[in-house]
Image 1: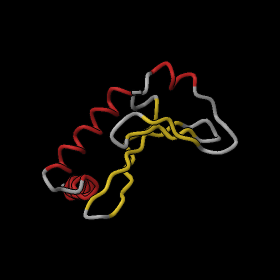
Image 2 (image 1 turned 30 degrees about the vertical axis):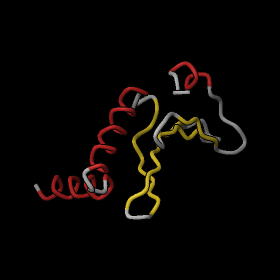
Image 3 (image 1 turned 90 degrees about the horizontal axis):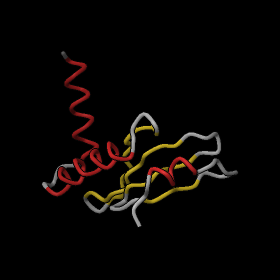
Length: 95
């Protein structure tokens, strides 16, 4: 079942970090300190990767899903989303 904004708002910190899953490897990591972090777990070239998508509520559910969809589009074309993001940041610093 997809994650809802209400479920995210109701999630409380626990003694250990836990996840609230959405779909396609996208999940919200709820930390004991109260932080809520968007993560996307995917595989590229037979290796598991973990991509950070932002912090909730700075990145709401709809924006996290949009970033997830963009990453999946890159992955479908054979491009590692993490490498692409790193290349973009390097290009921005060069300017």
